Length: 308
Image 1 (spheres, rainbow, N blue to C red):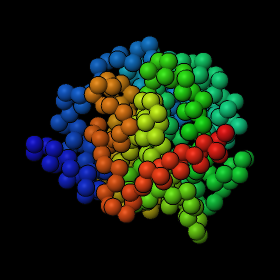
Image 2 (cartoon, one colour):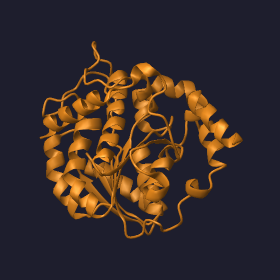
Image 3 (cartoon, one colour):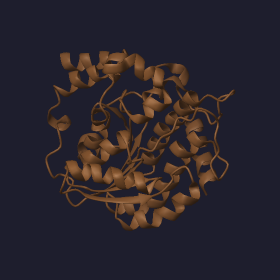
Image 4 (cartoon, rainbow, N blue to C red):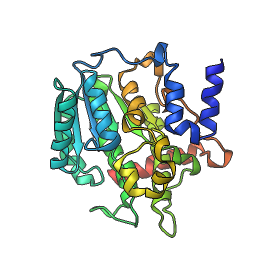
């Protein structure tokens, strides 16, 4: 009971719970379904990780490889992907690692890569690729970059791989952000454009989409990693990184729950949940961010239309 109360307090006070301190406090008490996965539990399984070339994605690749999975690093830059593969191979010599080029923000590139990824027979799909642009940028299809990278591309890839995933009782993980708590579901871009707000709004969309996919029968979960020390954070939010400094989690700590979820039994985790530090979390903390069922359905219709 005391551990549960402490966990809730850490979560609601945000800074302690999202920091390295929250991870260390919680991980000391993990047992039962929350315990570390057994060695080799993912042997014979195939995992796809978008944005696997660095940061949380690279840590996720390494974590899945250590559990025995064949891991495909789905990256925009094949050279960076090859370097990331070599880095993981050095730490996990027996790892079976593949590199697939795919820019998830480019819907045409997603369609091109999807056939090969489906043939790989995925058991786990991790939507990790992320951006926080300093100014408004459009993709080749004319979509705002945050929306395309976090929502449209992942949704399209999920749809194109849904049959392959369903055939293997596969699981989809959406790496969201605690920043989504400040945003209500909306398709509107911030005016004037603000990358941080656009990022948080699309991270809210990811959580909603994960639940909508779960309602349609796919094993789908959203996860937020807390505040992790990654190259993306350093380049996008340098002031925040300097302010928090030593309290930032390592990339491995930030990726921990995604790796754990990839290996967890369905009977222990269900589906359609939002996770942080191996526990399901509320999707809203204040009433004014709550969306209606009609708004959720409208998101699905809009995303389907834009990716058809």
